Image (cartoon, rainbow, N blue to C red):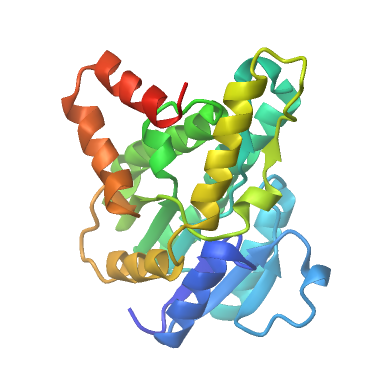
Length: 269
């Protein structure tokens, strides 16, 4: 797959940047995207295209620009995403819609833009970056869990719908990695008069610590390369600490209420 053209949304920082740098070092032609090119005048790691996953016109423009340059798109990594935390009762609905627009609608729009080109070339791979949080409803991260879980499910459907065209879809769910997602996410303020003040405040602190002490995002980049080099990718991949991946096994084998109790104990709820 060396020399193949890779498009990575949200490629200017965090996991997306790590994926791009690593794949470029392996000989791939890498293009990343960012919502605002003017913020990255000195970005030299690989070429950036201006694209906002919430704006279909910018998606179509960036894909057309890439096709004009390279004539093809071999791999799409739908990485752009946004964090959101808070008690669901107190989360403004417009923020819920924004999160789904980025984490769910965005990857769908980008996938729909590249599919005609992949179908024409009779090959292509789409890797949707989801989250281990998408496999369970986490307290005070329920909206994030739901948006990533929805992306996991729709990817399963897209796999079956596009298989006959020589196109592969797969999910890659990371655990906690050391990125800037905590600083960039929307979080409901911890309000003293709120009935959720103490449990949410403590959980928010714990979530931030998990990200701060997360693993090197290059581990995700290595997994992306492994998927690219796999002839027939699996439906789901996970990358993260052992206990984070083990929690998914426990969810499969334990009764629902027992698993719920484990989560509540973990978050001290």
